[in-house]
Length: 430
Image: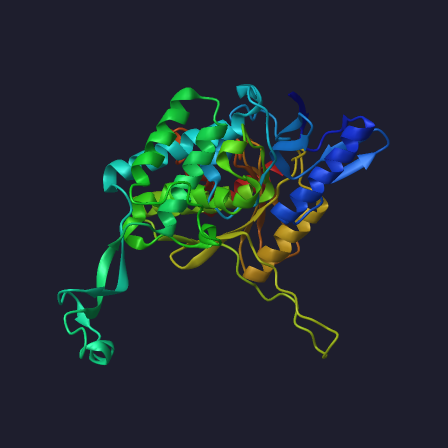
């Protein structure tokens, strides 16, 4: 097994037959991920992968390990796994030989370990998932609601047989099948013996009453877990991300490992949403009436004529409110920040969206980690008045005791911009 380490957005060389296998692999990625942007570009002798991170299997014992383009992303695997919601595009690649090294299987190992922790916690708290189902059965005694019509048809020659409808515990259910299938699959590809053993033990305990090796039903990866089993939601969220590509796993016993690649830019939007959630939570704990929204159309252009003219409505990636008043709009940009000024297109998008919303502050969010940078905005009558560039550290995992650090940073920025003395100080610096 040969692994080539590459960096997202940087050129790397491949030989002729390897290049063709890369093109085929990217074609598969396009089908699985349905990306919004191009994944592969090439020049004579060199190739470049963009907007995708993880492991891309080229077949014939060759894999590409694609690391993020963001500098200082040493713990990017942990950060990515923590952001998975089950909605992201994920590609599960082909077969692997046994002995696939742990250093090249990092994302898969991290997912397996995380899934084990989530599933273990839910199983200890709730035990196996048990659902109720209504069944029509024939019994020698009356136990359940009698189907009088059916009974009357045969009562003359077998009055002792009662067709009834009753509610019973379902020994087998699609959610258990899905959880067990993912546990078995991840156990098979994990390089850590403790993780493999833990997942197999949980799969055994969960699958009591379930037919052996029963595959999950089609479409189960798109179904929401019943509310009464909310303890399993963290594990189910991760299971959905895997189940949506179940067809590429094949029989569990036939694989020694799988590759996995993820479209990168939605992760930044997920991080922004979770940060705004934390801002609301932290602010509310301090007695402040903070709230947020993500997406949603904001009318900007209304056609004066009929077709073919069309309206245009930007969709801000995030909005922050205090006491019902819009404080700032946010645009997530998965691209490298120059460190001095945002790209022209980013500036125009952020300012026009903020103007359409009537916000006084427009914020551009980038995946790197850097202190907020601010600019005065002129010519837009104070809507917006300030443009800010903020680095959220997409690929930097924060331990639980630092989980609200990003929220505290954004809240401090909002307070700074709303301080009465802010405008004079900013103008003095300019």
